[in-house]
Image (cartoon, rainbow, N blue to C red; front, side, top):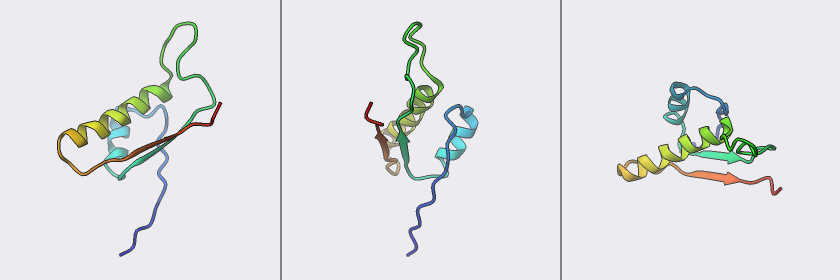
Amino acid sequence: MNQDIVPVFIPFNATDDLLMDLLNSVNGVLLSGPEYNLTNPITGEKSEYLKTAEKILKYSIDRFENDEESFPVLGISLGF
């Protein structure tokens, strides 16, 4: 059985339609930490990266709660 790993870039500002198309075509996501604040320190507004990451996590949780195939999400911090 061939089990290649092929990375697929998910833009941090992907539209909801594009994000769902991409998530439905992969079997997990690796989130790497951004080099900037996830929220605006003055306004508290979430960055586009954080908004997209939240959508990805919700997708994974929804699949788990609906007894579908698992959808792993791994987040790696830059360590700052």
